[in-house]
Image (cartoon, rainbow, N blue to C red; front, side):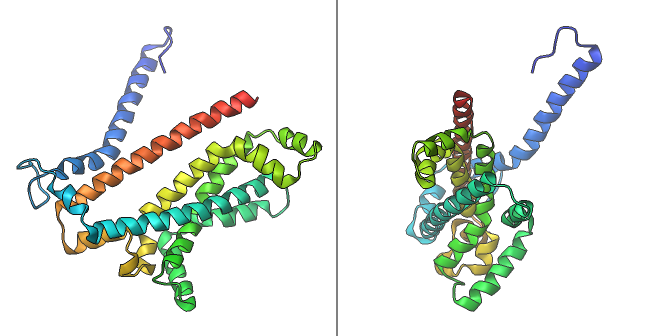
Length: 275
């Protein structure tokens, strides 16, 4: 934001100092991520600077069937199923919580959001003990259910924020014309909150796709996800192929965040247009 012409010298000094601080913080946060990208195209067999040369050999390694493509397939399967379950459950929970008022609503909201506040290792340990008793440890079903628990809060928060600006008079108008509540939801409410629902689904997918702590406790070698395989590679065989897959994950994460921002902007436009 530009300074007004009548700003004092001290205000101008603080303005520029604030900008410099923001730039330094941004560099501090992003630099460690950017540093690993050049190593992914290194011709060396070890992680080092300066680069002896450039090569795409490590990207060729990660496209071999085992172990990277198998772990990528596992991650996509688990994250996709988690996204579907978490989006359905989170959207319904958010809609119900914003539709009615009752005394225990804050407590119920706190319970829904508790997986975000409880240390992840505690959640993973509890999931392991429960799933081990019922035979779900080391299965895709167990991984999907555990990731769904972690992803639902993100959907609830995103959809709830979208519903805060939703005009419920449109739902009442649809019901006054004879539409049943479920028909009004699918024909009026859901199309209006679709950007928020999709944003929540993206967050759910990213949460599952990047999760590693639960995978350390529950996943067997047959269910190793990409982060779990990365962890094993860091312990057993450290080579630039790990950095290459990390670079691809960075590109995917940035792309998904760009989609979320685009959906947020579209949702704001729809809200303003409805008003």
